[in-house]
Image (tube, rainbow, N blue to C red; front, side, top):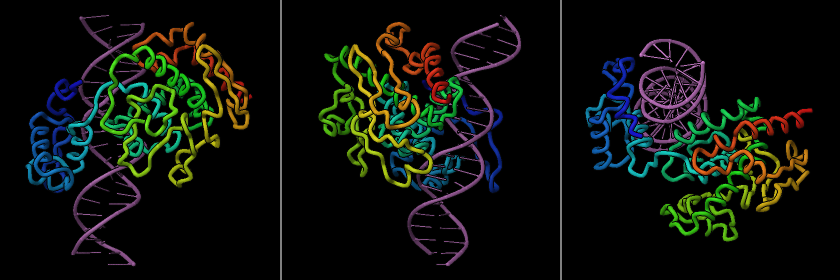
Length: 297
DNA sequence: AACCTATTCAACCGCTGTCGA
DNA sequence: GTCGACAGCGGTTGAATAGGT
């Protein structure tokens, strides 16, 4: 959506303000400003954002120029709905790294840290709120890992099977099938890893290995369960079964459910629409609340 | 139609890390 | 070692919009 066009040229509240003796524009960018910035970066490349502002005459801070470029004007920036694969990847990487948005964004080509952060805050935190638990709580993280992510995987697989004749929409990066030749989740099209990164990521649900890096310890509060695939099985047409019993939280309770029956009974497989909205419908929310209640008792 | 509330997301702010002088 | 400039990150804000009454 071209928000800029809809929202018009700057807000009355943010028009200009004085900073260090010069007028600094704030608020939404105009088409002319976008054009100016785009032109400058096309010629001179990214970086030296303060000089961008100086050289172009844009009454914006260097920070603002950088942000506008990265989040909006960059040619490879991808806009629109976050796909199921991307949702799954965000959940997985967030479970590993916590709020390291820029790091997570590195693994979602075309997505910005801002977009991922907004996605997390508006969608994921909303669900935590509905479940009346903290988004950083172990209960919620387990709910994500043992309910939400498996269901996303199942749905991705279902969509992949139904669209098996259609061409995939891959990026120019290496497919995860190269990393995970045994992958059977249907993630071989969009879920891909940028091989230019020095730290290739293998998701928990395929070949999860807990990171020992300090980055993973503080914010992320990563669960002690290292490999999700060891914790549950998804049998097409069968039961989702917790096998581990060595972890904690929901897993310890021997969480067991019949996903297909739940999904077909409440329309989770309805196709189209937002995965989270359909995934976290009233019935599933109630079910999870029961699980969380059992967990707490 | 008018109003109210919730949601979304672009943009801002403050802080930290890095690098060169 | 320190200082200043700059880039980048994550948290937060608030205008626009959608949905409900």
